[in-house]
Length: 172
Image 1 (cartoon, rainbow, N blue to C red):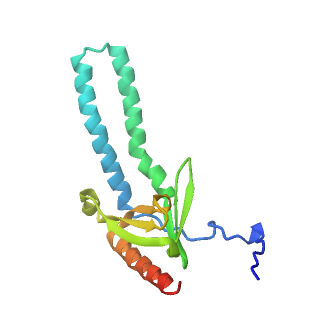
Image 2: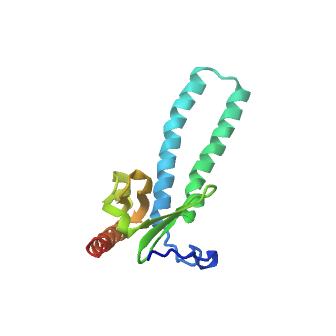
Image 3: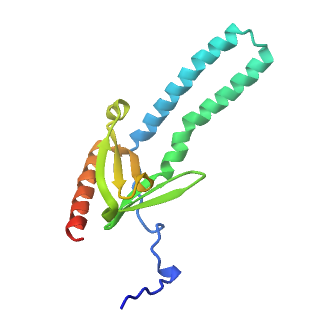
């Protein structure tokens, strides 16, 4: 006969006692470089516009003061946000956390994973980084993308997950 006993809330597993793995330290430098390039790419046309339109000194000074504050925050953001990201590989799933203001923890069970992929952009390769993406059954809502992993770690995780997925398929 089918039984479905209730589980006490204090017996539920938590994520506070797991050892979160940090992303690769060079990922912070990559993000700061990308943000610097974006700042520069916007600053050049804004400078040309400011000089070409003869904007009065006070509004231009206020605008550029705001721009400098925005640029400083953009450069500091990787140092603030990346320590809040991490992953854990457990026996039955992979956990990923992210978020400074809006925090989330995503758990992807191995028995839901259909495909695993590693990828890297030219910038990623320059910093020896890769992205691990787990594709799950049931659509893109359960997919998980972990960027900022070292190339070796991403490949080791890909192989480990593929072995786990193969085991869960054979035991199904």
